[in-house]
Image (cartoon, rainbow, N blue to C red; front, top):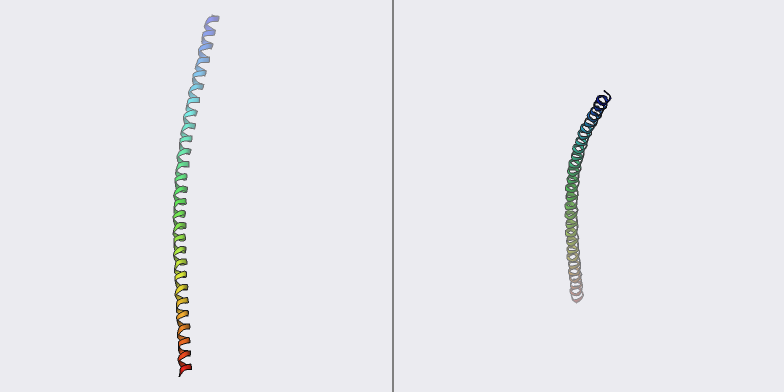
Length: 102
């Protein structure tokens, strides 16, 4: 009789252990699924951040190119203005020389 009680007790302990293992596996599966979802979310967010950074970089490059073009244009206008100023000075001197010669 005592052997029967021991066997039943061991079977009950095995049943409890089996239930605990099944619960642990179910919980582990849920944790793995949550981790996979978190990884997917992080990857999506990373892709969005990378795309945003690339757009910002492209806009920065475009602004730098525009600034360089504007600087070159300003330098060209300054040179043209100086050339026009020199030509005007030459014309004034010519006019003054002609007026003095007359």
